[in-house]
Length: 214
Image (cartoon, rainbow, N blue to C red):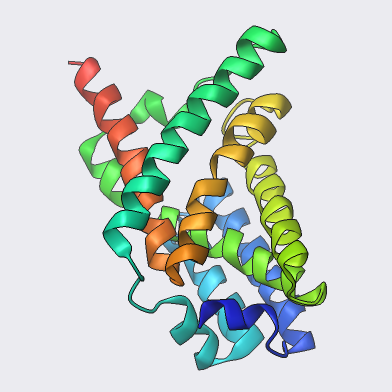
């Protein structure tokens, strides 16, 4: 089971390899290295999970999701609602501005398809960080919550270049908004669940924007 990774003995050197792999993968994606940029973060995530637990880690992470359809629907709705609520908080309570996602400037059907490996990379990044933090803290419920928070904060901060370095937006909208994806993964005992919710969330938004351009 994937939750067993929270208490399973980690390869200590593997922790460094995982962090290095994710860092290099993110750097390649951010810089925009041709051909490999779309798969770089996913590759770093796979290397990270493997370096921590070997093939057992990959098998545990990518099993068939439990209660897949129910988990997907509930998580997707929660993601949409949470995003709307946090956007309202940032704009109407904190009176802060928000920046548009830079990808909307060159949005196309081809680009949307290319996001598939990128989003898998984002899920792997968040889950690998979650597992490392939770495992180091003992794998308890509190440790898992801490892992969710740390991975969400890091996830949000890594989106700073995409949203014109808008810190509040990246932490409160992007960071908090990814929590339903992580919870979907934990509830279903599979990274596939969080990935499918993430893809649906982003793709529906992209398609709406794409149609509005016509």
